[in-house]
Image (cartoon, rainbow, N blue to C red; front, top):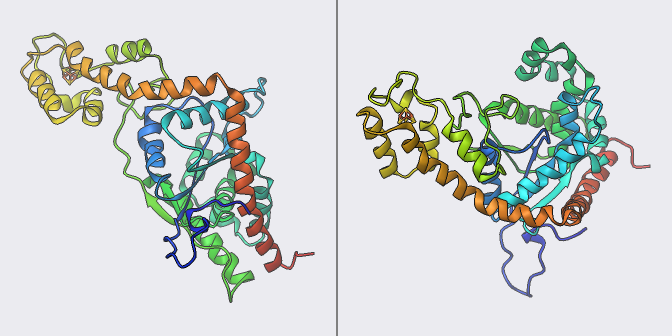
Length: 351
Ligand code: SF4
């Protein structure tokens, strides 16, 4: 098994062992170019975690198929999205030397554990997950076995690496809770004396409020996103044309930043003095909206600069990106296979 954690690095004789780094598992569905909401809601946290934890980050392409792609004529969409997303991760500063990056569908071990866990998971646990019921009511095409099984596949994704923590936003807590229940039941039924599958903890991520260009939740499908790799001119155009406080019709009308979709971006990107300049200038009508947006445009473009630079080198060398996820898959596979051997043996399948 390759050395995947600081805990297993060779130590000089008699030197104290460093504490083992906790393993963290997280994935993203490749459903389109990543935007600032993805960066501030997840990727920024991943970049920090990679130096303190044993991070496994995977492209959840099977999960993408549960809601996207039925009957799509262009079968290349998922492959393009997968590698584009890996470039977005690398551009954001994910370091393949520190974190293990891989693609879910390259790991059939997840599917085997999913099948084995399905034998002890009641269907009702999956049916009662709020996001399942809501989404199926809104779109009957989602009433597939794959979509129902999504949280169990997610449990297999986590448990196969015996992850200690899963970074989640508050709306995903239910999925981690199901993972814990699945592990608990498996351990009780098949490994009561020596539990095999540890119950992961949620690592609640503080996600700053980052609405899209129209003030609604930022999402690619809503057409209100600033992509991580939007060109500087595109960012300029998108922010300049953002709607503002609807009560500020003319330059001389005083406004209120709390009513303006631009303000949450200032809260995230601007320092205190810029924020008070905005508050004062808006409320006293002494500042135009384009002036107010200028420091924001510059701050976003500055944040994006290293992303563009890193992405450029990976885009010029796609083989390097493929190699990174292949090496990651090999590292991940060694861990996954060890867990599977234990699970098979516990279930009497070690023949
Ligand atoms: S001055 Fe700024 S905060 Fe006020 S309405 Fe215009 S863009 Fe919004």
